[in-house]
Length: 427
Ligand code: PSV
Ligand code: MN
Image 1 (cartoon, rainbow, N blue to C red):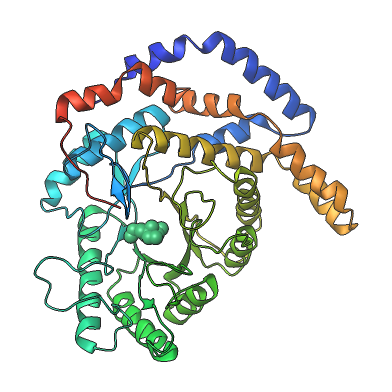
Image 2 (image 1 turned 60 degrees about the horizontal axis):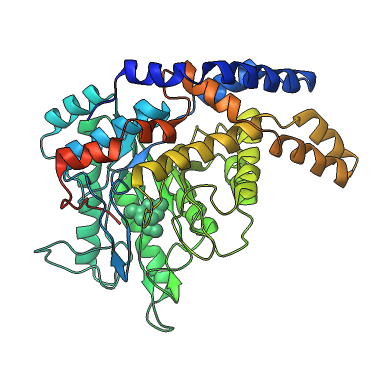
């Protein structure tokens, strides 16, 4: 399915009168506070977030999975779905591929198809957390950390192959998430496991083309519940530092213990030039993979406040992180859920751009705690919906993406095209 420019334009036309009034009012308010609204709108319009190839179908828990009609049955259809998201939002122009869930068998054909859908290729993701049919050795007791050099070799080789696929597609980065760890005390020698992991990562790193980056995810628990080999940002940072300039840490919002101060982690990683990737989602209890901003929108704003500060004070040349949504959709339509996530990300970003950095700095230098907090509240409480709608209009997308998705009856059309029985590969 393809959404046309005419469809978008006619939906937008119906919103223009009200939007002009709302945008002018917002602009007036911001400009009275010394903020250049046009600049903010342009920054939001330029912001894009990749969509993972595994998040386009119904997600499941370990207790079950409830199918959604019209799920994409192959990589071509997944790319089409991302094309729909991009046409509606203007901010989802790249796919992040997962191997082996989505092997691009005919890379030339995939490239042509992606190009027709207006989609490029973001970070490649490897998978050494599941055994594949016919696999000679098992990852049951780990992969890059494994006590058996043969298993480590297999996992290293897989990562190299993922890089090779990515090179053919024009991707520029590899994300490594390891499920390696232990379930019981005594099961694993912590030091040897970390040393093995570093050595294996080094072999993968040496296979990276010069213009590629490696992103190392961390996660405190699950699937192992006693120890994870890369449990936290410190371990990820240590590995990235040991590997070299092309290696970075990746922050996945769901990969923290409750109440962790993620914005502080973001600040530290950026300050050291090692924040390479970012996975957005939200959670109440653990790695819940909920819609971005659905539970802790203020935390998301504080994280963006650190990101914006990092962009403006970039002494260590931190690259623009590879942004991606890493969520799962158990009860919502996956495409609507992803549109909601994009909206939440843009909301937090726009609000962070409104923070009066000079006033904040001034309050901090005087230890005026109340004034500093008020600066943040001032930005957080601003209604930025007109800015988002204007940014979408400027990039030729729907000003109200979820409403447009429903008005165009996208899901039913996908069901008519694909039927109700297909199951998308993924989490
Ligand atoms: C598992 O928690 C996870 O969500 C990681 O964050 C990866 O990015 C993703 O799965 C797929 O490999
Ligand atoms: Mn992730």
